[in-house]
Length: 158
Image (tube, rainbow, N blue to C red):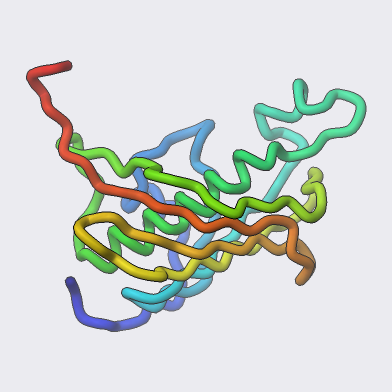
């Protein structure tokens, strides 16, 4: 692991450098702060232009809860890559290994700004466990426990 220096923020260019995701699936717009090996605070600006709103729901646009949890996992991935001092590569994929205790408290709508607070609970045998909370205007909209793992890609199977 790298030293425990804190980064104050990351713009979208640095985020794209630390996530394998690309449009339309990048769900983090800015990292506000990182404490390596501990915690990340990141945000997503939710706009009416999101590709999921025309179908979810045309008469009352609501961000799907599963995408809120995915955004928490993307924040967790950034924290993990920064903590390990590595960047995503074509040789590996950062997978969800589990989601527990996911709760959705309030709907997220166009115009909202979601602030994600994700903490590393533990790392054991390459499995990273996190606690995540998503807030809009200081109010909890979602929370979940997540597990992720960095797996090597077997190029022979491709």
